Image (cartoon, rainbow, N blue to C red; front, side):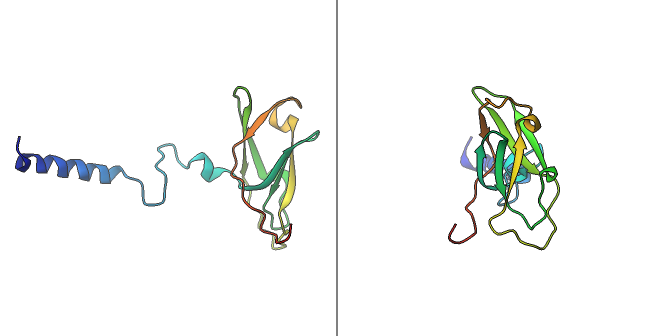
Length: 129
């Protein structure tokens, strides 16, 4: 085949690719939003005697029941994903966020378990902290 015969083939292939491409700035996902789009961004996290403590953004009314905890079994550690299921619509901004404790029981884990937290970590917006 010469170049003249291949041009329609390349043009058709290019148009087919455009029809299936995701809009600019979005990750393509046939299953809906990606895991990162659903995860709550957190300021800090620590494991302790009570469980996993995560510092999250708050407008003054954020509480534990506003979150869903997803645990994905894995070796050597389970992956934990924190998802906010109810927005905080209050107007009293809590500078630096608020600490939410997710107990080992909440996560269905033993206190000796190791975890990987999948949520994105963001900087604390409070100056001087």
